[in-house]
Image 1 (cartoon, one colour):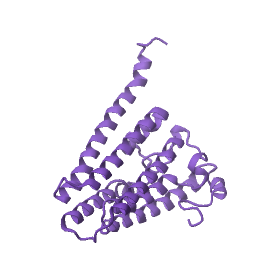
Image 2 (cartoon, helix red, strand yellow):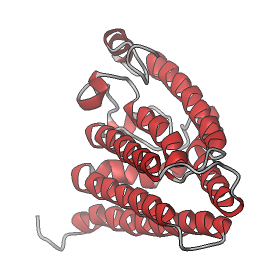
Image 3 (tube, one colour):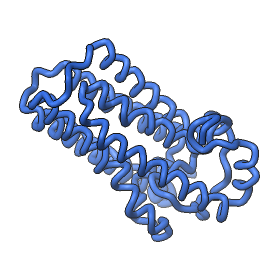
Length: 243
């Protein structure tokens, strides 16, 4: 096929559009994350704040670059998630709270806590340990993202993409490793920022994540061929030995 054929241009255009959209979304997310935390704190001389923001944004960027390189069709799916008509109605309500509102609320509370000193001082060593857990949570979720080419941002059965059950990587241990990583990250982030009060929005976000996990698991067992058998082999949704 010639390099300048209309077919090639048609196939390439969506990837270009997605790249720009993904980049724009990341820039907006970066600005919001930084602004919420530091405006709430009322100061810029906050080492752990900068370490947290720098670490989480770097990990997010790395995971997205890896997805684009390994599963470009998944990058398209995730960039255009709002366009799908078959998103489960309950997920249209839950997803924004888990992905945006909850995490941003945690940053707001942590920033205000830094400004007004609501929490007792948390030793820096414990805060660093919290940041390490954040990194581990992100790494576990990214592992799932790279292994599962159907890891959409929303809950739906992706029939047009040939949706099948994924059993490799972290899916050998728990059925929803992406959510498991988030459950580690939310409270660990509050500790990394030295805010016990930020554990409240973190706990609410974790609760919604557990609810979303249960609803998604039920959907997959009912609608995705082979998932019920997979669930029989991998018993736990999020935490081995617990649930």
